[in-house]
Image 1 (spheres, rainbow, N blue to C red):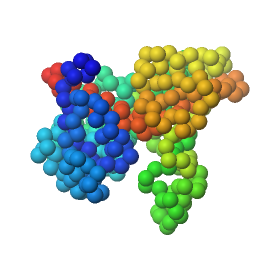
Image 2: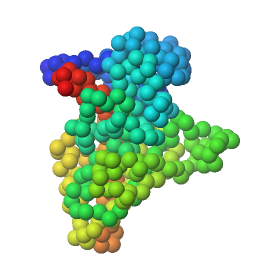
Image 3: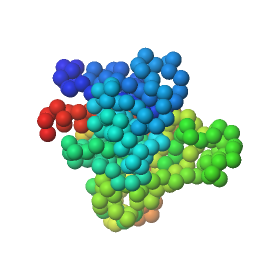
Image 4: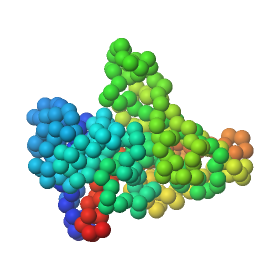
Length: 315
């Protein structure tokens, strides 16, 4: 506790009070070095004890009035550089997006992968996504065992707030269908960004997604084609167990046959399903990793803390 209290206080602004925004808020209540200074959302403010600035545009929030050190863009709607930069124009020294960007920004940070790369000049930052962070940690551990020729990742993801509960006439055929009644094939951009953190995977990663009718708890189904046919299930599992021993707050291992509801409430980035690893043929390994948005909310606070500590150190 003394170590936590010795950290510099971080004054955070939250843009968006959806599921991840609320998780960040709840986590912050138990972390003495985190102060949520202002929250902006289009919803009614009666559930908040802090100021709830009613707006739907980043540039409309007067962050400088609240003295924030960093704004967490938690809506998931503003992903291009210009939209994120609007938070800076409104007075925030930095903005941290909870989603992957649509174009190059100053930095994407995934705790456990590239914390050491942070720079005091970074202003527009992303912590990736829950899927991205979970995949990156698994791949970092496993591809250290032996070289891989290709990786295929399918995210079996709980439905999200932008999906309709009933069928409606939207712009996307599949995403117009009821999230509560269908398994919906979807795309995922994690494969485009993973090589920026793991360069040895450049041109080797393919990603897709299936949105399924559950509210929380998601699963990564990862298939790796190794260059060496001597690869074993034990070698892969042991590599991830080693990662879990090194960074238990990020990677956990389940030796039990778990299901999606068992990951709810887990604040790690990924919960590796050791019994789920199988070998197919000579060089193919398939593995499973569970995750949920609470873990991503915790990582957003971790990244915010990294930059505040960097400033406090005068770097």
